Image (cartoon, rainbow, N blue to C red; front, side):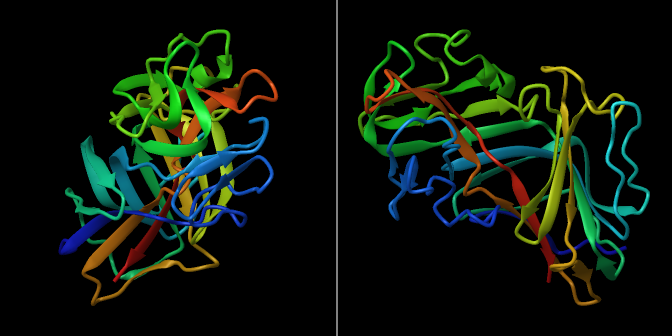
Length: 300
């Protein structure tokens, strides 16, 4: 088959959930709020805030991307996934890095044009690592956990950690944190690489979650056997299925020359932080890690 002329990855603002808006997920109006300039204000305890926002840069590694005529079968801890109804549009055994800045796009390689038709489903096989580069302004005093500098800005540092590390709040965290820094406006962001090894404590699957264009599920697996992991720091792949129907299936027409996968990132970064002491306006920040992940696929 002919290759598509272009397969494009874009970094865009997609609404993930019905209560999300363009600024992210910091607008409950009670605990956290983000204004039109991207400045966040915390109004109370961080418990339940789940404040997520768009990073300045976002990096993922893609191994496979495919369209499917029927729903793929998710993996379990005993059975691998079934994608027999799918056709690859990207197959990169060594993976290809997608490194996007806000509003940018890049053309992906190792692409093949799928047959003309209607595809209600798709999947992505990717590394379970997310590179986050972000600098964020706050009206509150934000302090580098626990004995570091403080100010109205926080930014990522060049470092790597597991998502599960955030489950040891206060007890296992290093002081001062090596993952983020807070201070004045002159701080420069590095790239923090988060290894997504659990969605929550002892949770290695998630979804379906409603996203723009359908629903998405995600499973943490190993490349060696394609099975869902059962422990932290063991996954090396993320297998995600997106259901495009009933909203808008992907249609490959005879005239199609471009395939676009958009990474929705208005919630792709989130804080590891807490308020200390309780009732104060000072917030302890340990990291700016990954937030909810979403894709949207279309053909033209």
